Length: 305
Image 1 (cartoon, rainbow, N blue to C red):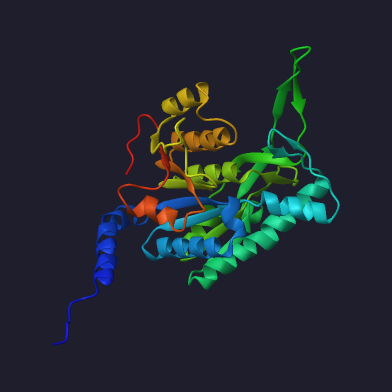
Image 2: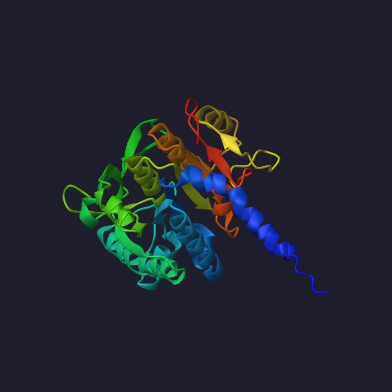
């Protein structure tokens, strides 16, 4: 007699979908801003997985907005053309020539490759930078350092490195409303028309704040924020983050990432998440399961949907 019972593996898939249903209903119509960068950008399999995740979000009624980085690719191009890179506090000192090369790499090769991955996954995407449609007005980033001998603070000139001053969401709203996915290169334009290279995390945070996003995702090369025993800290707020910084648990490059998260949630983003972009479909696990997959940051006094 033929067994007509359904395949247990297929049943498990069906149960996974029904488990995700409440989250799909909760986030339908919401905006998620995703900063894509790190190791995942150089791995074709991870890039394909990422594109599939973004297309899936759009298909279930969420409006994903992608902001990408590209530091290593800019460095490789500068090396290829014989331009030496100089860094101060992790930020590239950007001459006018370097800014032009950064724009070429970010708005050109990287942006269009990511658009292509999304299109191959069945989505429709448009690549833009902050210079398009008056999207992001930038101002020169100011950094200071204290002279150890005189104890006097001096200004460090980083050249054409900027930070968002004003974000006009109009162009992004138009793209999303047309059923397409915005893919944003972290380039802005100054009041004087100058081109500014903007840190991708900072750009994503500013875009998320302007869009009043439900989530800001920062994809990184680590599982999230770890305690001193190496265990994942799943929930943080600004007060806890400051305490962890003070005691040295949070250090290095994680500090500016969390500063971006805190600024975003204090400016109206429901929550921000730091998670490992190297894990296939980590973003879906974070969004559509109760356990999540990274470190969730929310404001002290705001509930999170």
